[in-house]
Image (cartoon, rainbow, N blue to C red; front, top):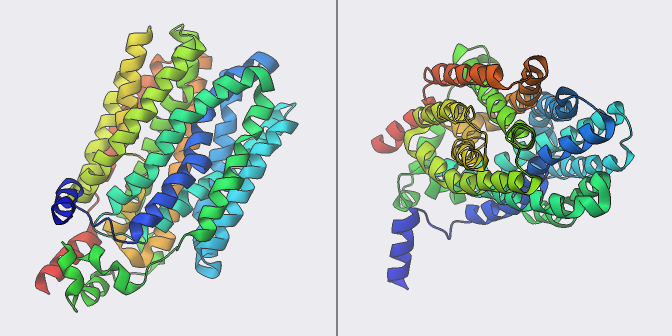
Length: 433
């Protein structure tokens, strides 16, 4: 038994008896049903509404824009203050319920305005769901915040593998309205009970193993004091007036737009430009999520080890991924692009808690992480419609791809100027103790 424990530690570098990992497991399942599956299903909707209503690609993908903008506004302006006033669990339950109602509203879609209204209702919940899971998990971790977030987010990747096949199998018999409405059932049956059962926050004593450089640090009486001393002596109002804060949120927004612009247009690109069948296009999408799931673990470890610099290097991978979109014209090149999209996508979303905690510390997480997540949602909302607009205007994605390469490089450049202030202060304080 002792040998097994040592091997486990040498493989993972973490103590799996730590109660925070149970919160990660709950987050994994919530991500599967309430975020990853629903998000991965959206690209399969656009062909259906284009065929039924005769809409342009821009019109079809704008539902993702309305959903994302709504989620961004909720995250930036509402979630932080609401969590501080009412607590995380009541807010979490409310937004998950709103998301499930939003998917049920697909049954009433018969015009472009009801279509967009459905996106608005989903956006009220889904963007906040992403934020609430990240808040819940990141509260339990300091040293392994990137890995913990990646492990929870792996549920999103598996949802992205499973749900498109569910859509492909059920949509011919049930139609797209009922197929998408049924997504809300998993949210009600699985996500809500898990939120009710989860512990949203650790005690100071429970968090001690995550503060030091090893589990031995938990026995040091000065560790908690060192963690408090490392906190930045700045108010939230002072933080948001500093250029570094805006460098973070704008770089996150830009890279999210590039990532989701490629992802949300991928099924249209594969079926209508590369000539793939729907089944082959979905199989390529599954590759993206399978690779993305594995990539998340690498990215989480990489971000924990290299902090902001690691995130910056990952943003450069996004630029390379976009370049690989240019030659897609058959199944082999689609698979290559899907693989690269999965690798690059794996590092996104889980970088938000790392940036918030490593730069500004636990004291500001309830206010900083919602803003970062909100700008991520804003970028995610803008990218798909922007890329679709370039196609509708030029009859090709080429100019949009070129723009997205430049935007990814710009995001990496902006983030390269950010420093992990709290992480550096914490390392200095714990070494001094």
